[in-house]
Length: 252
Length: 66
Image: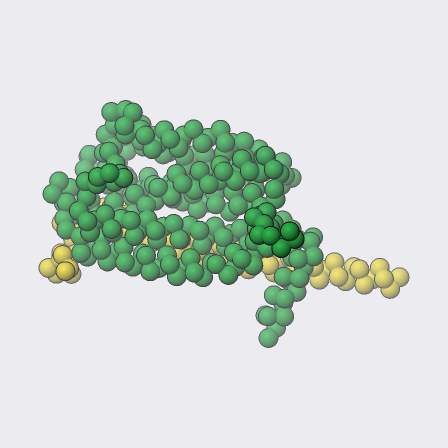
């Protein structure tokens, strides 16, 4: 029974640290490949939109950034729930590592949305349900980072931040379904499981860009997580071993 | 295969150039700067932790000598 595959093993920073280090180059490479393919399809091959002209091409970053902003928040809330329930060290580190990338994705969603809204609606910003709830998401990210940074004791910071994440998670379905629940200026979703209102090349361009954003986010978050692990576990033998190895590598 | 007739057409984006390139430009900028910041932070953290480790090692040696 001793050699049985054990998922808890990966919840320990000792095993997660080298695993993440080995995976990062792959996520970077995949992100570049998906990004180039998506930009080629979206910006060079895809035809124009009959309603919005070439302005619609903002969709190739607007939708992936918006998806990531919501998904990263859900992942952080998931880590927070695990952390609060099982008191695992890794969960706080992961939530911490994801937050800045999530905030940037929320910002990009709003920024590209403003640049899309101006020519299409005639306004950079409207207090519409979709836009307002996405803005609240950005504030939730910033609030989480500010709260955890303000508390010195990491365990308490993780607990307080985790509670904030879990309370704020109600906002994500509000963003997602806002275009259905309310009469918003924001258009409905262009993609759903049964039918899509987009041309094939547009759809594939967007999905490839979404994959690029996924891989990018994972790569950056893992890089950040590895640094946080060294920092937080600085007094453990495994971190001392990693640092010693790092010095030898640098001396060579 | 390629939709555009000329490079200037591509840049103009049918009159939406400012909005399209404003979106893509800022996204590219953020996706370039964020990893640089993360890598720099990692390097400075490792340097700091190594200094602390060396300082601890010296303190231990001193204690052992006394």
